[in-house]
Length: 252
Image 1 (cartoon, helix red, strand yellow):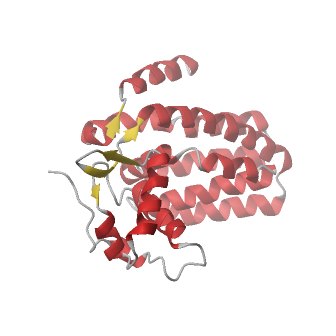
Image 2: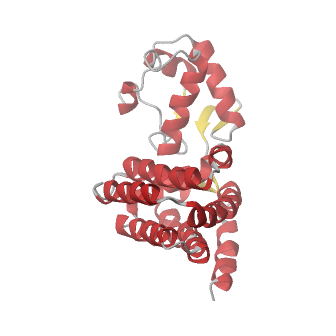
């Protein structure tokens, strides 16, 4: 049975009326985008313009505009005569943006190891303390603090603009990150973050880069189990095996 978006979902708290002065269509896009990326709206969920408009107390026009933008980002799929559905996670897109992300953030780690000041190291360690306090399975909180950690590294490296540009490219990768964070022991990511911070604190660019690359390749180890549990969430899954073989050869 196809999933449908329910007006009773927790996202009712995310109203578009009190956030800021952005146009309603932009706010609606941001809310639905967040719900899709976080997994609140799972792949295959059917979305109705009228139901969403009623849920958020809007006319259909801003909802229609939001749907068009989300379809352009690959997050919604319009099926003629059937409706609009949350798209499956495109593995081509996931693996391509993971490759770009690793290239960018490996260099960010190197720069951070050269440039980090003592107070910035303190800030990174404070982020890790907050990460350690998050309950296992709280994917939204874990991904949020992970974002904060990586942004802090980009700020130390003076590369926040590059990091911000990257965010617009990795919507499907971020969907995977939420799935991974929900099932992977949180201490794995925490230990990997600590390895990056200690290398930066020691002023060791090579070690910082290696720790970052290992951290960002974690997806290859976690994805097969997730894809086995929820194969209906994914598209173009044959690409993963080839990338896993490449990664194994690189680390041999």
